[in-house]
Length: 262
Image 1 (tube, rainbow, N blue to C red):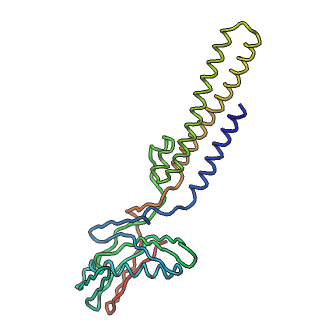
Image 2 (tube, rainbow, N blue to C red):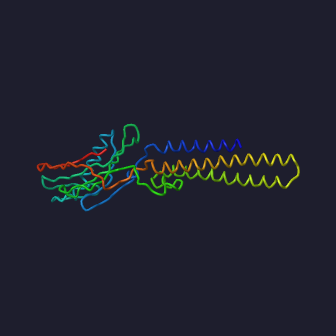
């Protein structure tokens, strides 16, 4: 009995620790690579390293100009030699782009890496598609299945914790009920009063274990439902949200228009 209560406490502690760890900000999934193309813009990830955040960011932003000059709609000449890309064109060549989200990580002292999710208009005259980054998810019936809502939100480890907790408690309830039935049967199979007393004591003990297991299973399930509905998930790209844009309109110079969104 004491051993089971200890296991019960350890399971709840494991779930609490897991919840705390997995609730911390994780590296966004889009940093692994993302590309979308619509009729008016491109949405992609650019990365760069530098000696500090500003240096890495500056290098990444330059890639935007290098990558998408071909799609500006202006008359340009693109020369590609290996990994080197050179762009030449009219003086009024413009690339209109905006940063949707960015993520930094320190690789080592004095070396940073930045990931930038950037949207670039195919033509400076085009308006951007509405897009943003969110960690919110719409309600799903999967919240009523242990761990499924968490897995759907990209939090696989947290989902596994809920599934494991539910299995432990349900398994404990089923096993203890079997032990209760076994000891009750033994009570009727003997006339020895001391054995009857021991079997009765065992049956009562396993009944308590069963009840504790049921309470634990219900608690984990309710926790899973609340978390599955209310908790935030992994960052994902979402279309359909307004983001204000200020176009770059200097016709006398080559430039890049960036609207930084944080």
